[in-house]
Image 1: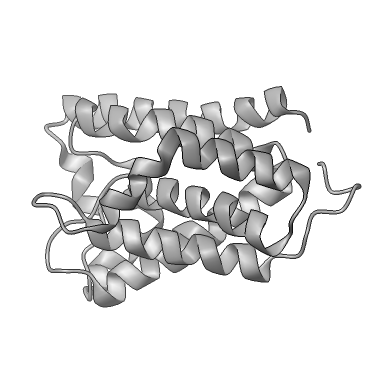
Image 2: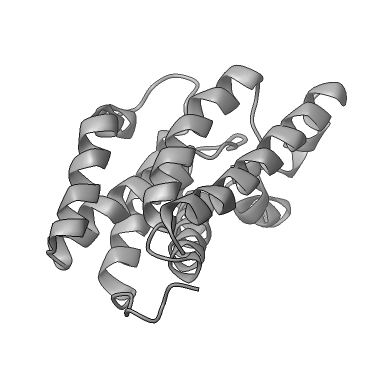
Length: 184
């Protein structure tokens, strides 16, 4: 898979987020009831659903551009790699928020964004190569300010940011390096 194909995969997911946002807005944000509610059995489904739901178009816009850029950098290594990293980030990150998050609804793709970002940075640390270092340098240059999202801000699920970042580190450490044949 080349970077254009990787972008198509990520753009398809971004398009799904946008379509859900339109439906959500038209329904008075009724879909947000499917978000992640920590320590609530009903909130378990939110582990998977919450990254696709947003509280407003501004909220979605704040996540879409970094998701597209960072997701494409990950997907350039292959569709399987993007899916594997995303599954670890979304599932492990969501589980951590479900276990340790503050009371209240947690929605948005920012945990996924933080996971992709830390995966790119950590992968360069664990598997040093010119390609990995270049991708990490680009991610750091473009989105180095994400580090401030790890701090508590009113109205923001910094728990999702921290959990996604930790899940990205775990994915970088545990997922084997992509082989030359792992481009599907």
